[in-house]
Length: 457
Ligand SMILES: Nc1ncnc2c1ncn2[C@@H]1O[C@H](COP(=O)(O)OP(=O)(O)O)[C@@H](O)[C@H]1O
Ligand SMILES: [Mg+2]
Image (cartoon, rainbow, N blue to C red; front, side):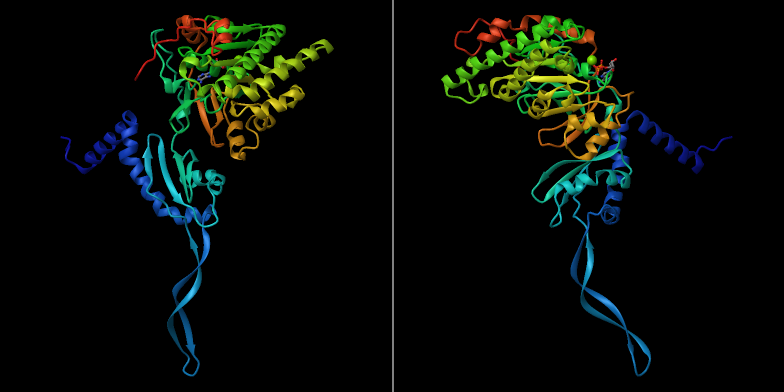
């Protein structure tokens, strides 16, 4: 007869419960079992970890010390206590760790002379000391820095971005030009915020997920009253599937140049309109007067810059000049660029370096060589370059993304197949403004343009 009350059975049963809890409800398991243990360990070991990572400072402190003194005449050793200034290691004060879905956040008080960057530099050391995936600086206030510990990488799972279901699905004012395209490493939604960062560079080797990001962008923007314009010099192979939602699509170099000249002209007209109304950008205009924002999607920028002969050289120079003008003045006038390419560097031609300098948003997918990562991410923190270079080929869509504050983050675009993007484009075909509407909008002689009904959440 098996005795079920035997302690061994109880231990086994408890183990089984824990294992199944961890397997089937990992989030609550993390909050209730793993995190408390981790938090205690973090506080307990902080002095050693801080000292190992070079975050402590030597300070002179008054301290009671015991000094052995020899009384010469008798030879007796006598221990005396003295109040004395000694050098001690001071560690930064650590706040209470706060759990998040896939890690924790901790705020530290900076010691005199420290800056948040000192913590950004030792993130990798901290991650090893704390036995977790990664540590990132996620915020700072005067005298404080907040770190995020990431216990497991949420980017290993592909998060499909839900395409807007039906054409009647509206958009919200606060989402205008701020589409969600995936998830960030800290579990938050990855929003490409064109209102904050007007132009974006989307770089990466082939099969790294550049086109997928364009699909995600298209799905995110399809329902909004925004004109989408495609430049696809791969003969329209990539973007022609979405033609229903594109206000214009250029597939040859001559078309691209024409379209760019038209866009520069539209920009000029919008500039005059802003001057007439006495505002500095279109967002200061009342809603009824605001021109339709334009997002220009360029797939394979290099194709725009390739030259075979002298005649093409002139075309390329004009293309580069037009793109540069849009990049420089577009923000205020509602023209936004998304430039995709394998390499976006000076080897494409003289205009590209100047263009790159105007593109604030950077998305760096997996790259083949370190120079491309440097080109895309600029002289951001070297850790960002390491992160970009360590993206595995089996994780397409993972990228290093710069934020508005100059910091960087790993992110993964949601998977959007060409079919899903095409369905979204077709579903919102009637939202597509015509070129005439785009050109005339905001200039006081509007053509009728029905934007999709606004949804108040
Ligand atoms: N976020 C993602 N999640 C899952 N698979 C992805 C993701 N992004 C891209 N892929 C897959 O990777 C492959 C290459 O992506 P693609 O966007 O065509 O790369 P690129 O345009 O850089 O050559 C595609 O087959 C796509 O299905
Ligand atoms: Mg592609």
